[in-house]
Image 1 (tube, rainbow, N blue to C red):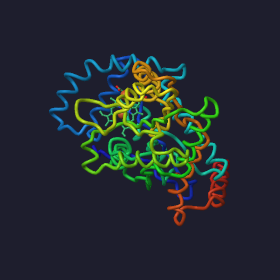
Image 2: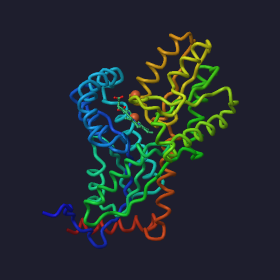
Image 3: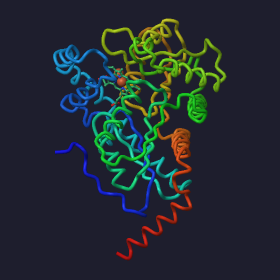
Image 4: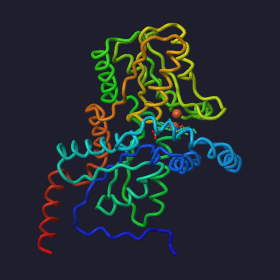
Length: 364
Ligand SMILES: C=CC1=C(C)c2cc3[nH]c(cc4nc(cc5[nH]c(cc1n2)c(C)c5CCC(=O)O)C(CCC(=O)O)=C4C)c(C)c3C=C
Ligand SMILES: [Fe+2]
Ligand SMILES: [Fe+2]
């Protein structure tokens, strides 16, 4: 049997649409060890995430990680779980709906907007095939990571590539690599901090905490660390912060290898020991609040800072459903669609083709 999927042909003259696929990391289906285990297995089996040679890593994963970590992680997930599910899933769904509304408002019909998760469900393969079935000959893939890392956006592109490999008649795909220095994104982050200052007063120091990556990936050419620094510098400039008024640090170290530094928890300990009266902390590498921000930063980070002698610890939420983030996503999509300007119908032509398709449907 052929490995290629059977696809319905595009009907000649039928309504052609542009697909927009937001892609986030993924999250377990429930805050239980049973649900966390397959999620972690899939995540940690990705060679983009863990670069240790397969047989050695397979042994470590199955003997030392999967028997223990799901239980510990499930407890952490339980502490942030909402009535609507995992915060990462809740925010990604809302972001998709808001982006769909904004595109509809400004561009009219002709777009299908959806989201997928790199690990777990809904999968990139299922969603790309669905977009194709809905008539999308062109798809913009937008990984929801402001800074590019091989282990985040790179892995999303692997999943997209693997899906295309299975397709007999694949769509044309353009992807957004990163938006770490996009002016609209930086402005949205600055607005978020200013809103927090307006409500709670200005803190004495701003800690910007990004997800960490192994240091070896930096020396091998991954731009992630430098992109985080650029986001941090641009945000500090937008807020008018002097050099000593903010720190860029990296959280979520996994395993024994050295990761990029400084480590967030070490910085929190030092800031606590220095008796910082009011600390503001933001995570500009995450567009949605999730386990890493709500549990690791807002809860564990606070405990570390306070235990070391720090004063007030004020976590600034991720952009989540903020208008500035949705506007950024809109602009990123449009930037890619403009690349197709010459081969795709204009909004007026799309409207016309939609009417023709509708008339055809009514006659049948
Ligand atoms: C094993 C190494 C890991 C690398 C490298 C890594 C890179 C990386 N991760 C994110 C974003 C998120 N990671 C999240 C959770 C998470 N991350 C790792 C490990 C690595 N991440 C693990 C094992 C976990 C699971 C939780 C745990 O057991 O600790 C999340 C949160 C998911 C959620 O459901 O809320 C996000 C988001 C980025 C951006 C990145 C590279 C830059
Ligand atoms: Fe991670
Ligand atoms: Fe973590």
